[in-house]
Image: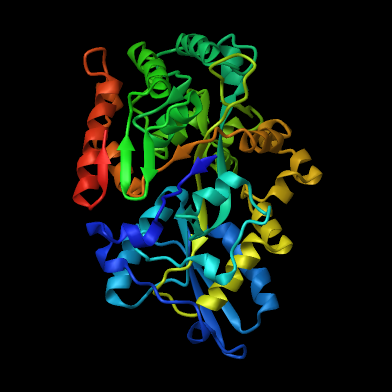
Length: 436
């Protein structure tokens, strides 16, 4: 499972320039406690309001003195920093992608929830708990999970003469050639430079590009697993089998999914909650399968995204905020409300529940799609670590990895090497000891 464990945690990290201003969070004590009869309004920032609002309505019924305002904020991470600097407008609870938790934890901008009693007593899959932990302490509570799976358009593959979902990457490559033979606008997958797609491929192939030990970080994008994944993707780009001009989350992406010209997505299982809206014309045609394997018969997976909710250190009414987090993540009713709203949770109890697993969806041809995603969640390869400044690394990737320019002479590996160099340079400027 993913590991974001950095030895020495906050105390050591405060030596870095990035975190000097953030050190010295206060302790959770009586001053933080809200009188039980006081009316409180909690402001929650999230990128997906529907599941949170569903849980909030039930929470408000049990807590009549509490009103929960669920909001979506543009560029939320920057907005949080601005609110902290201004000393006003700070949310009580905020959603953080797993990769961003270390960045905010290392600056003490979010609470150590262990001081409120947060723990993983078997409630969550290990990988999700590790994703919200930093230096052995939980700074968020996991709310959704993104084991990587393959969504595939069964009709498009059949039209191309591919009878079943590719089980290996060799089969994926062969299927890609058949799909592209349908027309220049047909591709088995799109990728304009999505960091999470590439990291999922590397993760599954056994690559481990980041090693984090306190403030000492090693970046290595030349290990065998990384080269294996990158080499396979390079081959497919060279042969025109990947739509490198279609960016995931763009209008073009929605159109290509909706008209069936993109046959698969290698992405987090959470896509189940939005693909129907993105590709309504393909209802009944999509299915979910495990990631293709490097070796036939293996069952090795990776992660692609996921998020947890945290309490900003500068927020007010933090004890009430923690009650709300507990309700959403630990309480059966709160968890079920989010599941019913489309969330794929990291809660072990849910992932083993027969009713949850046996649920079907006409969009996926009445497939028991959750069984596939839950199985993928239990086969995520161990040993992965993210950088404590992964958010910056993501922007460096987006800004410098233009797959439309990849060629035999301008290789994907070369672009990845340059990206690694930028990571090293940035990390050292922030006070870390980063090397290749």
